[in-house]
Length: 119
Image 1 (cartoon, rainbow, N blue to C red):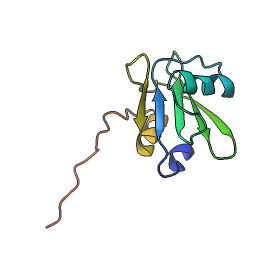
Image 2 (cartoon, rainbow, N blue to C red):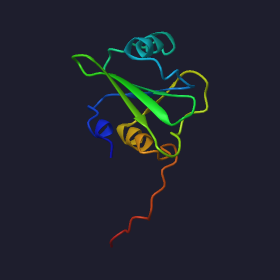
Image 3 (tube, rainbow, N blue to C red):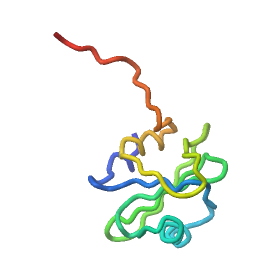
């Protein structure tokens, strides 16, 4: 499990920013996208996730209360599952963020077995 997903504070929303993002953007550029494209406040404590054109790189922007944090993850193989919308946002739970960061399809998780019911 990703360290980031394991430590998401309770009540924190995780927002996927639909479409593709120029991954050359840093703190300032991504904060501007949050304000302009999503009409949100980058300092609200929520996590904003951006994906590059190739789909193998994510950046996360998060205000931890003392400063902005910018994290990146690149998959060595495969692509991150992303909404088909070209703009707007989708929110995820901390568990879905963990799946996303591991390269798992967070939209359709499949159980490996059916829980047994004891009688």
